[in-house]
Image (cartoon, rainbow, N blue to C red; front, side):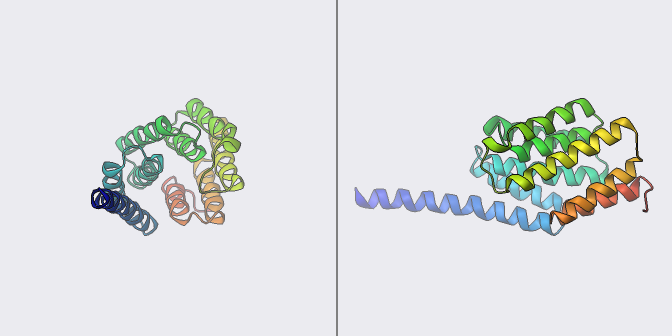
Length: 191
């Protein structure tokens, strides 16, 4: 009996270690700009633990980056599917709401984007995540402000992306900042 229990525990531990290995590999690939490979690593982690919202959120982030860098609409759609799955698992997750707002804003679905950012803002105090409340709020308010600026047409699209990139860089999100700078440049903004 004890041997069976030990084997079961060891098997569960190996399974957990494989999940974490694929997740960590995805994070490392993400940080180094290898977004396609990162998404594949997150998919492997998801195969091992399909009820982990963090894996779906990370996948969505990588897909958002791919969509921005390649201007590929289908990647935004894939990202939204991953985000919706994360929100199905963890409906109060502010990071998932922020990513949803980002993807919807990229797709020029501004009303829905604003609703997503607002849902994230409303859930800040109700969720315990890896980021501090200040970091979570910064990203959500930044995204919401960018959408309002784009929607109102008060500043050029490229300038909004440049401002967003500056803020992301200040928050230490260098990969996301790099993509936002690329988007600003792609829109003809060189400020």
